[in-house]
Length: 121
Image (cartoon, rainbow, N blue to C red):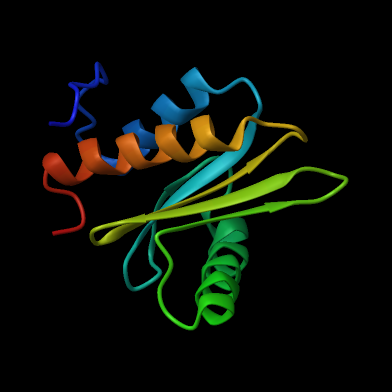
């Protein structure tokens, strides 16, 4: 049985982005995309996220030979994450040494709450 998670209802993608920004001090920014790659909401300029987010997702999928559930890339400058949940994908950029398991968990919970509210259907 999965334990209950105390996370707010996230009625839309913009609120999901705000939620992730609120709970992660290491977050530089994030975006929520539909399964076809359309930016639903993003930190800052959505157009700036579009190509970069889609390229990260495509690279992760190509490396695994199939659509991945999540990916994490760390560099000397920071870290990038993507999480796929149902028909939604979240992409995030963080500071270095972010706790990856927590970041992936938070992103997945945000997407689950967003899907429960009917986004991405």
